[in-house]
Amino acid sequence: MCGRYASTRSDDDLSSIFDAAVALGEAPEPSYNVAPTDPVRIVLERGEEARQLRTVRWGLIPSWARDRKIASRLINARSETITEKPAFRKAAAKRRCLVPADGYYEWEKREGKKVPHFLHTDGVLAMAGLYELWPDPELADDDPGKWVWTTTVLTTTATDELGHIHDRSPVVVPADMRDAWLDPALTDLGAVADLVQSIPEPHLSPYEVSTAVNSVRNNGPQLLEPVA
Image (cartoon, rainbow, N blue to C red):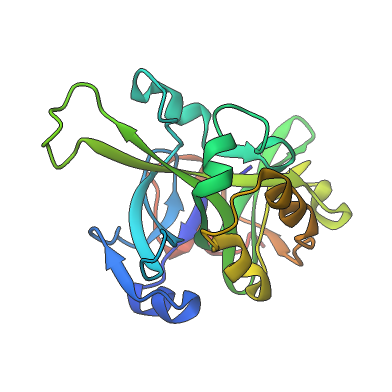
């Protein structure tokens, strides 16, 4: 976790839910099967700028990376070590974000098979994330695509209720803690670690869905239909 999720809300909905005043970049099409390296919307704050929605790629590329290949390995970050690991430490201090989702998919190991489930709440999940800006060495400094924006989703130990499906789950930031998580003035890594530890366990509802979600080629609302 988290390797696939659904994100179908419009910019208007997300702006209202997350109090975002600006939407930057082309909004991705609604997707019921968001996969690593896909373009996704995130919510972030930068300095004195207004809170914004921005389109980035899912899979973090640290600023020091030589190429883009590392992105597929950094779609998730263990929340317990983001203030320590070189790939995440700077972003944890300065570039935290929220990754909106309708819910996410997880696969339960059952009798030698992997059974997909959809985990959700009644509203939009605000998954804790980090984002980075990576300078593509193959592009000129004045190229508009020089700086590549990417993101990763934080994970934590799954609760007892969900642990039977998978031992990890996304860190979900409740509404009353979103301002603190996005606060660009919070840069002390110790304080960031304390904030992560204070985020409560989410109350999610899981149900089994079709194995059609296994293929990134499949998309559409039928993927969310419960298996009888």
